[in-house]
Image 1 (cartoon, one colour):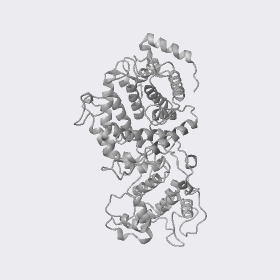
Image 2 (tube, helix red, strand yellow):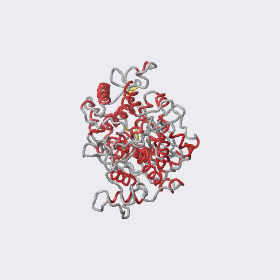
Image 3 (tube, rainbow, N blue to C red):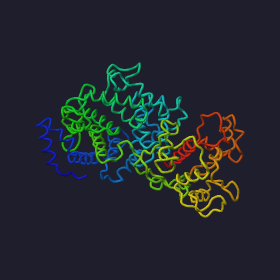
Image 4 (cartoon, helix red, strand yellow):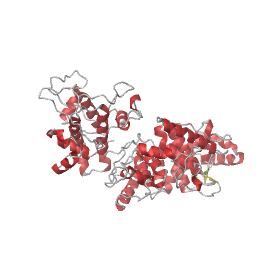
Amino acid sequence: MKQRNKSLLIIFLVVTMIMGNAVSVFATDHTIHKQALNNTAHYIYETVKNRQVGSIGGEWAILGLARSGCDVPKSYFDNYYTQVEEYVKECNGVLHEKKYTDYSRLILALTAIGYDPRNVAGYNLLTPLGDYEKTIWQGINGPVWALIALDSKNYLMPENKKAAVQATREKYIEEILARQLSDGGFSLTGGTDDAQLMDLTADPDMTGMVLQALAKYQDKAKVKEATEKALLCLSNMQDNSGGYDSWGESNSESVVQVIVALTELGVSLDDERFIKNGNTLQDNLLSYYTNNKGFQHTKKDSNINQMATEQGFYALVSIQRAIDGKNSLYRMNDVKAFTKEEINKDEKDSNVNNEVKIKEISFEEKTFKDIKDHKNQEAIEALAERGIINGKTKDNFVPDATMSRAEFATIMVQALGLKDGSDINFEDVKKNQWFYDYVASAYKNGIVSGTSEKTFHPNGTITKEEAACMIARAAKLCGMDTTIDTLSKRDVLSQFTDYVEVSDWASDACAFCYQKNIIDQSAIEISPKTSVKRCEIAEMLYRMLNASELL
């Protein structure tokens, strides 16, 4: 992150100030943009020495540096994580009683540096976001940042047992859409009975943030329609310098949120809707760049503003990632998570089978035509992205079809990254069959068993209780404690009207899967003997991998 061509940039900025509209060259001169990015990264690295939990000198600085691709020592992020652990311990896992955006901000920073926010000093920082009413208390920014955080690495919506209303992604989306103003934009309290006078018209910052949250849901017609209205609103609000006024003042942070929104949506910054008087959003942002180091909040400021600098920096990062064809700022499936050995060699980790390996994403944003808006879409896509599960065809998953025992053995082996097993002696599983190695590996690791000493019945379907048993065995390989006492088992299963139909050999596994929310508890029946669907198995496996922190 050494400063290069410093004099060239200073000369360029001086010429820009004199020539006014000549600033538009920023939009096409990637060398100048990259130089500003590198110099700002260097400035933040040098000034933010005491990393801490907070919106300034904390998460936004960490996020920007982690996503920038700049050469930042791993120890810089490790020291920050140590500070986070100490902070979380001191507050007993409660970052704030009402401001749940604190959780979202920290989730984003930890995800960006490869640490798991679901286990920080023993606390799952995602859990509060499962409380719908508390998350939306702050106004629209609560659900907005909850979605951005949860979607940053396709985290499973956490179950919050203390919540009066359990949150879902759909609830948050509906809450956001209900707040859209007549001008197409959004504001902090707009769209509610308690709306402040200043919030009756769109705010560019809030509108940009909303679009960042909705970017991943453009396949939903109602979201797409709301997005187009919001984009038109932002285009109409943009001034002749390519920027925005917020609270009566032109500032750099407002243009930052719009830039990040467009890059998350995949909209070019050269889109004619966002070029005014020859000036682009990028031109406007860099007009606040000063002293070859950082950003001003407003043009009348004489000094660098730390908040403006950290936000301006991650906007530069989002632009550069778009130029390089990389994942956007908040889509962090490309972040390599630290292995458990790299984070903590605790007792739980020692229980993980040595052959179990985390499956990385190899098919970014993989999906199927027939799972759009399906309740198990998130689970199916997460597994498909990692090559764990395939469709029946290239474009169709066929979610309601049943799954054979051979197919089940295959996805379990793929999910856990297990090696080939030893020879097996099932008469109906031959070495020349495509599933032989998978069945052998699943059998060797105790995930599946035969239907008899000589048969496996590879084309037979899987019942719900059989699936629960196999999932529970896999969970044990992943280090989870699958034991359950008699009293707990009775309490868990007796809530279902048909619990007596569960086979004795499957009762422990079924109770474990329900207790850990691996199987959805919302139904009134277990239906243990019913053949499970492909979509249901995908959901069970997805939840188990999340619970064992292998996604």
